[in-house]
Image (cartoon, rainbow, N blue to C red; front, side, top):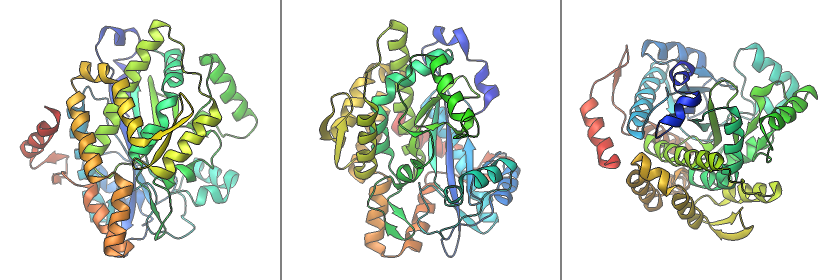
Length: 404
């Protein structure tokens, strides 16, 4: 998310506006157009993407890139930004003979994936060994503006119980190395091996949060604050809460759904903090159990309601989440958007369900990868060097069908 674009909206000014801004980071795999295997060409694709007006971040593995939207004021603006970025990066990838694919884990991959050329990543490889060179997972990180760092920590406390529900909705990594992993989000299981990952503990204050992080860094467990990989955290460089629980989404509209729910959740929590409401005192082990089941089952199966510790259905938890944030969605005028996108998700299935259906139907991981690459650019429009779209009116019409 662009720091300059959000800086003008931070601090006390937020309290006078009806809604916080939102931005999204999307991580993608680069795969060979013929074999479907990861292509170690992120630096080359990043250079080509610059010609299309998009600045890419290089991820830990050389087969990964990341896009960052600017701060957006509504889902229509966010959708347009996401579509433009996927179009431009997809075009840059094709120039290098590969495809951009939005899946949480590689559907095909060798056991070792060389890391990107940077001093930081080399240090991570030395310090974390195999954990670093096996790392090629792709997430979707949503940044939502908050007034200050103390509020960010308290908002994180309030939204902890809903993190497993967001994970179940966003699961998009059932297939890994040619096989069904048995999990809807295998990415989240792999990611949980890192220190300071998964659901976070409850923090009394920003000072308490900083003290815990300082201890983890001073002990050598983390290299620095940037390695705090909890599913929600105060951003270390932006005036936002960063929700990191989701797999990268197969289509832009699914990213918009996750972002809209997340922004409404942060809005609801922020107002609870301002009223002085105590956050739900959810035991960390119950929350971790709920996250594990969400990773296993996705939206089709069981869940644990962390607020009660009782078993429920995953769809029931999604209904409860929508009800919890209904007032904020109404204020954003996005309740209909979320309702329509959720209905579509339940009818057609989320990313993990699509992956499994595709593998059963085609029995060929390479074919599934090719189809996933097409879905990644679904609804996108051709982008010319310089960043101009050739069909903006068609895209606007498509967005209006969901947003109004």
